[in-house]
Length: 597
Image (cartoon, one colour):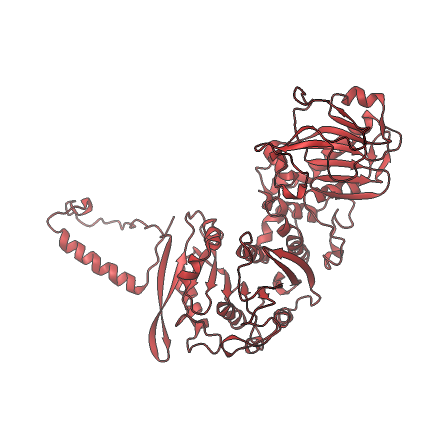
């Protein structure tokens, strides 16, 4: 349902128009609603039809500037389809010389986020095309933004408890100023600017999350601080972020990561464990000037929105269904989940892991790679390890159904084939039960590459087996045997044209990799249990290692790493120090699935 919101000026206009229409409609007219006979008033009051919300509308606010009444303007952009009763609201502040409509027109990536129903966008116009950060005009722009928020009134479509501000250049200065002087915003993203020295001296009334970006070659707002544009003296980028973090009692030992944004290398510095589960991040873009254009394939606004969402404690409630925690435990879950989001999930956007294939196709196709083995590979060992693979996968995905009732209630682990490196043999029981499966013997590969030729299903082009370049492995298929690099390798089948797979599959998703020496590691394309088979004849493995490594195929991270998770020591997790899958593991897996779906 859409609703219209009008200013006093608009209402007067429509009343005048309605009066003129009534006069001109007397005695008949083209509109059937004015051709009905006059009836006595209905004793029961009726509710007039609710008009639809326009896609966008320009609103007006009257403000006093230099003793004069000035009409200020702002643009509202709603989602194309309104299916929710309430939306977060994001203010976007243009740079000096710009205006709200122009900023919106130049950022289709923000328009897309709005139309995905992520939020309602507000695009205000600066007085004389400037925002007053302290030297630009005599307008009180903090008051102006407060008046806009007040103008939302009781309209529940605008969630005034979820307000955010994104500013570019001069607009970033206003975002900083509002963040320091008011309690309006839950988070801000000042882009290509940091706090001025004057704003830095202000103590904010409440904590919020900050996403700050600066370029090393910015000539207007120097990354190292000092004199800059409009006569301002700026703090350094690091000093500005540290100032925010200190005000919010964050952990002042930041985590540091290197990123690539489009055409630029970026250093990301994060202060976590802030009051209210807030975070402070600043990004230093190497070689960038006073710009937010980092390359055609990079969307900084999606990253900002992900940051705002993942900094909101309420966001994590959806992942806690059926998990009973006190507030201290919940805070511990959230601070580690925030790091997990930025360390792992932000890097895996768009990549499908086995959770996706399980939901889409009800199966997880794997193949066994025996790099080394004690004795002969037996049918019993294969059966046991496949059974364990199935049962552990079932344990992992069981918790998804409480979070997503539409997730599959069952799935099958299927075996695509077998690879035996040189020196590894199989006994008669193996050939009796699995002799009709694809197999490669006397292989000498020890990398992530398989011995089979793989092609793209649509283009029929040979895939180079760079697994990190593919979103969904099911876009590929095994098309034949690969090269015999050592001259000794044997393949079954010899030809694939007439081959019928025993389980009806033509592609695998994960290599189930074994060797005698310790080498337990995994990603979505392989799960290696080196040194973790305790009985080679029966295929007995260590559960906690198996379950841990399977977690990695779902993108879960090693919580035991104190450099990445300094608050993780008290987290019970199979990815940390537990011997079973825990509530935190279920919580994290739900976050992963939320991104996958």
